[in-house]
Length: 84
Image (cartoon, rainbow, N blue to C red):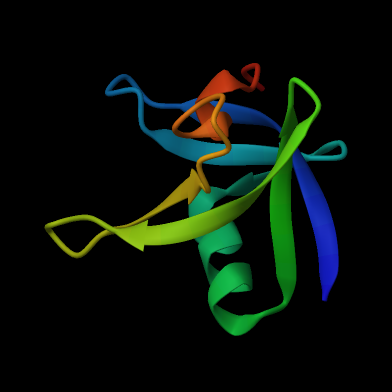
């Protein structure tokens, strides 16, 4: 499975991630969720030299969202990425 690095995120007014940037292209969160669910790509972040894979989780309301596996530095490394 090919791996892609997420380098930037875009959030809405409620501080929820809506889009991510991979290379020079911006993708909606739903695209990354679909890739992860069907095994197309595996995405990761690289924060402070630590590689963390992006996971999808379901909220209590049943909505899917992106997060990363805890690495001892940040609970969700996506929140440490700059805005796009």
